[in-house]
Image 1 (cartoon, rainbow, N blue to C red):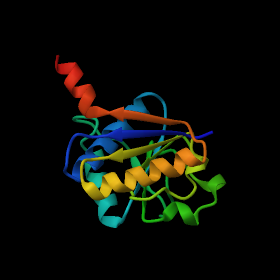
Image 2: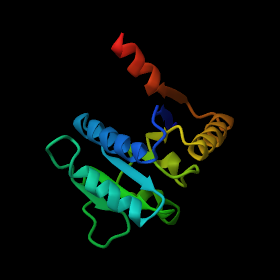
Image 3: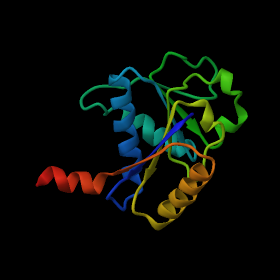
Length: 158
């Protein structure tokens, strides 16, 4: 069954979600996993593509865009805009390890992945969407894990 991880960021800024997604994808790659990052639109794909040139620091994390012809199915990170997953047969997805969701709703086909990362910042719209997603997963019996990064940062500094 798909594991769902909620990462709660202390930041209010929406771009903090994208920055964390890039770091999470880099960490997954270092651990031998591949990621698909789902964002709302093409502008989000462009911002993430730029971030992946910087993460990991002073390096480049290879990535491809879902829906393009000739996609490199070996790319460690695949970027998907809009509801690209809803149009895909799960068997044809190039990645099944980690889905990093930056949309404000539960992604279609999420159950085709081993893990889903929901990244929540302190923006009220994002928080409300995160609460709704949490209820959705909980009501269906998915294993939920909560990572409060503000608490972790506080405990690391003491």
